[in-house]
Length: 195
Image 1: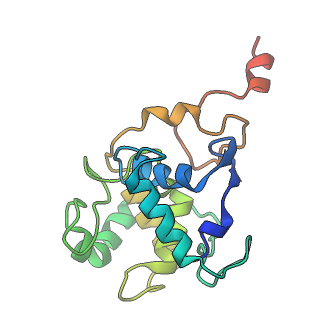
Image 2: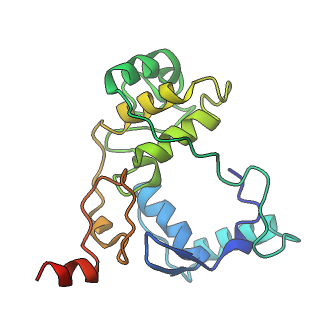
């Protein structure tokens, strides 16, 4: 999923935050969720360097342009089976991600204390399955059929991973996807109905 053109797609409304996010917000989302780390200072040098790099990569790209390779095709939702997924993980994924999912020099951890947290997009089974189907394994993309992708995504995302306490503020205007299976605060409308 290329970063080319990403600079030209921000600011943009994001349902998960319930507001218009700047590119800096999106970058910090990756640091805090996908990398389970700390946010960068929005006006600090590190952030400025990343935004400048994204601007360089997007030079000449019109605002709102769709780029080849942007995103990945979404699969129709299927019911995954963690037992079958464990077998797919062992036969296909463990060689890069490690037998215990803790990562290797070739690929990041998929569960455990150093993995993405429950607030990351990849913690959603539909997102993970679509990503796995389109791009994994890295040297044989689209090797797995959709059911295998859902099975391995289900297995991976039922393994222990860090919590993300700020998840309770996600989707403040409603619209939480079904596969974002952590609790979020109810919308104002839902709060009013429950009174």
